[in-house]
Image: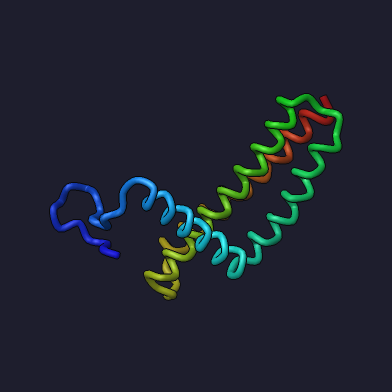
Length: 130
């Protein structure tokens, strides 16, 4: 795979188009999911938590819109954790040396996840408590 952009056109010259591009996108997404599940305990914990919460939405007596909001909040939290893990991987790839900017990047990713979890709690509280 070519990661450079020799023409400066803003596009990578990987040669994949159409269905072939979709197939490779699915493969890379699968690989990213597997890498995150294997390497990130926090993501595994969130998968369990959100699996329980998502399953619970189908047991609770809530409207379809409320169920959709509850599900969306869980998906957003999982997305935030994937992005947080990606940030951590890039920071560690650059250098394992302690640096204030590296700490800031990792702390900001953690804060994003904490905020997402607060959103999950708020959505559930508003819906269940009225």
